[in-house]
Length: 149
Image (cartoon, one colour):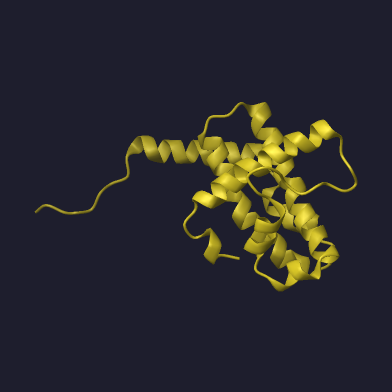
């Protein structure tokens, strides 16, 4: 009797396991990011939602086969972006009134990310903006991104 079940390709399973292992190596503290971003307990659910957006992007970067140094740079920028989103929600009450997707749309676009405060060097800001551009392209390609948040 023939069945319509498709088994996952062994290479795909191995590839996914390798990507997950790389993610754990790249970001061993990933689950703690929301707590580290927290200013007050109400920030924790927002931080967890930010992490839900950033984790698939981190996996996407890993799948691209980027160099470890490049992955670490993007990781550091994403951690910085998460903290900046939390901080901006305190400075801009409008960001608190909208879904998280609004904050991402307001703070990153196809050219830049938010200006970081306290100020970082121009070279650091340019590198941070490059990560934000990549994230913007990734989010724009996700069909459900506008519905989440």
